[in-house]
Length: 197
Image 1 (cartoon, rainbow, N blue to C red):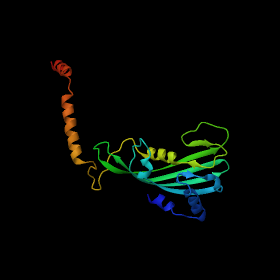
Image 2: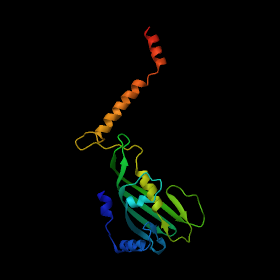
Image 3: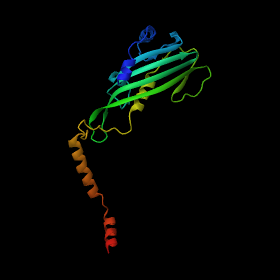
């Protein structure tokens, strides 16, 4: 997490100017690139609970993700390098308890300004030549969602013991044992008896 945090410190007057320019808008994720010079511009965000509040069916409700967006602007081309690092509060798939899952990742978004419309891909989109701003909030939301693994289980504790709730695991073991006992089909029992003879 320290890599992104250190990279978020203002390093130049140009970066400060880009940040001030961006914050004039009520939407902090709306980047007005038309007023920016060609070259590199940095934007930093902390994606937290408020960001996910308006997302209707989001499985993420609680998070704190430090995000550094580096925009490299050239003629008719915008390249966004996005670095994310933080935690997302998730439910454990094994015991159901909540825990903070550490996440990190890097993605690149390429935005081409052209009047020739082409089909947008996952990490490449097109804007018309007269466009002057881009809202990256949906892109950031999708990238954060992709940071989550399919299986989420409590990490082991520092002493090496199981991180899951011990009481929940005991109940789960009891239910699993009962389920295995009642699963035997009487027809199979009859076949086992034939095999013994």
